[in-house]
Length: 254
Image (cartoon, rainbow, N blue to C red; front, top):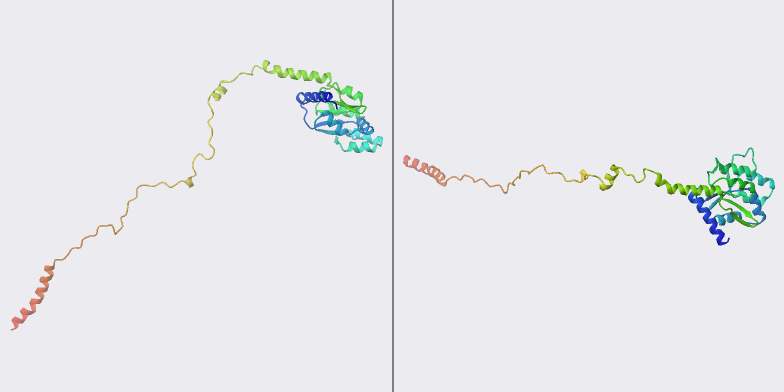
């Protein structure tokens, strides 16, 4: 792919990304005709899609397109289509033509609700999907994979979206209006909350002292009471009386 064409495709995909909210991987719907064309030209369809979109994608094929491939009995093309994710279209009991099937899942109330990229060789289908805003269209031109320029409907929707973003702030009366309560909150800085418990754990606290306890003096420190001493005179007198009494008795006897 030439550098000029690659830049153009990248610019187109940015419009779908920012305006229509496309997200990677891009869901890419592949029809039976482009599978047969790539198989005939020996073109690697998944790698070609990735190189064209320049982003990660998810190839998908509907049940009606698979039914159309089974009728061709082209086994290599069928095997290639089986490697893609199957997209349920709810037409399994009564299959529709591939173009009608793809249009029914892409064009939902005039918009690409599921944000599909469509790779198809059906010119009529591409012409119909150009009227739906936000549908990237890819096809094979000989042996080169090409992305169509963004349609008029897509560019019109993108312009309206950009204008709405620019004028939204000017027309909104509430923008720039701040309530007094909010001003007061902004003026007063919020206090930082301390993490952890507000009070210490009661189990880790020391017990409070009830009061000054009366100190009990040990017996060794107590002052000893003085014993009352008996006078020796009284004892000597009593002993002397006892000694004198037998002598006196002896003298009396003589």
